[in-house]
Length: 416
Image 1: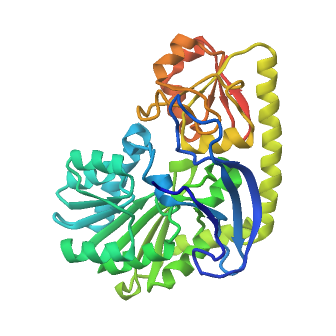
Image 2: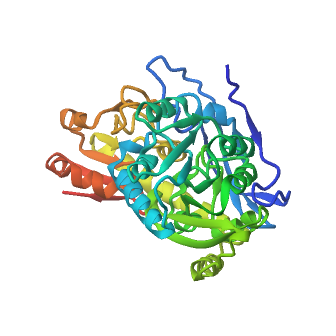
């Protein structure tokens, strides 16, 4: 049995400094992906959601860590292929990187946090060798059944050596939204350095805290996300392992992300202007100071008041409210905004692994999207706000029934 323990982080994941201070606090929640059956307990464990700031390297990180085995090896229900938007992104990414790096057939591509193998499948179709690494057993099994060889484990420096011995050095190591989930970030980057060829490339995509800060996307703070990345501390992290960032691209997934391209220093590749430009932008916005997180706290408190007032007003008028999307971030939003199953009657989600279950802590039932047209709510809150446009486009006929509500960056009603 896995102990769902939680401990407070005392040292920075990037530079190992002890100069950490708590600057931002959200309402404690259960693990955001821990959807429960109808036999749920009313007393689910909740854990703190506090952000700490490192005065030494300026990295922003979660202050408390929940046992990753509990988060990723039990009840993990995120599947990459569920979102057509993200699938399209991964297809374009594969084409872009193959062309950018001039990857040749039979080159080895390793994906850290490979999920169900959606990304690697696009590389495999281009005749590259692929290998996935993911700790979630159910999604790893899906990948293996679909012909994408996947190691069901956490990526580490030790596993990197095992892979190198069995498969050879990697031409490309890639990772999508996984390097914000890793407590032992140093161990992962050390493993990346040892597994890469001398001229190999590491590409990681992670949410960009600059976009979170500007757009008020506080709900991206949840227990799976232990790091909130900006370019400035990442430069220092890679330097510790004889690597350097050579390019950073801003991309759209997760509401706003960065694609960080890094190589070994011995590859002798110069960094282009994108690296220094983003470091300067972060400095201009004040992200290198504690004040940024203090200001963020005040902004989110005001947003909370506005959203609660909107929902309370609609319920007072006798309106029914459902929600679209049960991403992990919805757990943070519902707990911090104190949204219960008396406020939102149900949630619909495209992921069949979540349908028929109840949301963590709040126990709102989750159905398939076709139930919208049976239940006919007056309003639908789009909790998967990063996919709001395709959701509304795919459900234009819902506007004959009711209106959408977008919770952020300003709560507003969209529709009739």
